[in-house]
Amino acid sequence: MSESAASSEFEDAFHKAAERHERVWVFVAVLMLTLLLAGTMFLVVYAYGVVVRTAGFRRDPAAIEAPEGSIAKTGPNAYTVTIVARLWRWSPSPLRIPKGATVTFRVTSADVLHGFAIQGTTVNVTAVPGITGSVSYTFNRSGTFNIVCNEYCGLEHQGMLGRIVVEGDPA
Ligand code: CUA
Image (cartoon, rainbow, N blue to C red; front, side):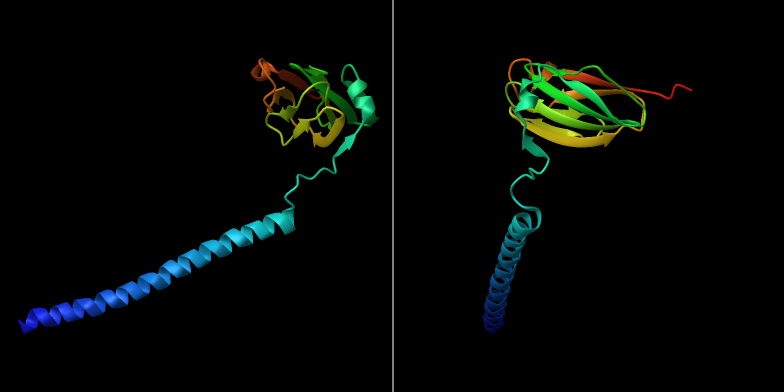
């Protein structure tokens, strides 16, 4: 039948065109994904740097020799606290500071890698033996903050907790 021949001719033309469109759009999609991947890698390498920023980390033999953490007052309401991590505790803990205190944490480890993180804050520093990592934080809210270890460090890793008590205004 001429009708079925015409319809099949139309279908052939349609499929040919559709295949062409399909190829074009598959190519466009692959090109977009490639550009996205290359662009992301470029951005990661050149804009952010692949290597973790280490400006806050430095070698400090005194820090590893510190048997326990220490607190030093460095200003009206500023403190420098040396945090020593070891299997499986933090020192000093509990750490008592007044509300509004700006604390510079100098974090190191006496044995293996630990992760020093204070819940509810942006403080998160890896505790590395022989190296001191620094981070500052201002405690504007009184209450108890938990220090957790977020780097697996053995049997009691999950129990490696510390406390920071931020005491309210004396008034
Ligand atoms: Cu210390 Cu996990």
